[in-house]
Image (cartoon, rainbow, N blue to C red; front, side):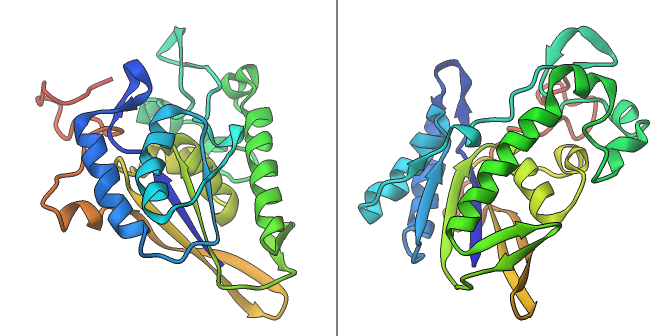
Length: 243
């Protein structure tokens, strides 16, 4: 089975939709995705993800299953450098998250006190439990850190969602600590991440990522990826996001 995880296009957060650039990205993305034979589409309930999906769904004459758990990962976490300002779980300074060894371990990354207070473990379990239920409905049931291939197939399923929750899904599939993905990877708006099962022994599958954050559909149209989700390349770049 093949999984495509798609980040929404360049966002207009003020109205939970897309910018003009984001709509172009969604259209270019749809030209790519509409050519792929797809078994099922799933989408976040948030407007920016639904708007991104709409271009593809209109082209193929399909509907997506709306999943509340695909909304952006939302626990309000208090960063060590700004404890009075709750923020998203993945926006910590490098010198802070790298100093916490549990953030680097798959089985313990939800244990730091700031995450415990924010209910990160509960939110993570809610997301991955629902995600696994979808995968089980497509023939792959989680057992330990692998998947039992109950009904092996070569179907493609597509998830339209958000960067934060995408990393939660990837951490679960790849058995990686999510904070490392949040802080050391960046999927630009409309980027496509692809994972494919490998069944090297009959009945047991591992999901393997063969592309992350692919925006080739933008480059082929001469469209530069949006800067959203990144921070300044050099501190002196005052036109780029610092914090």
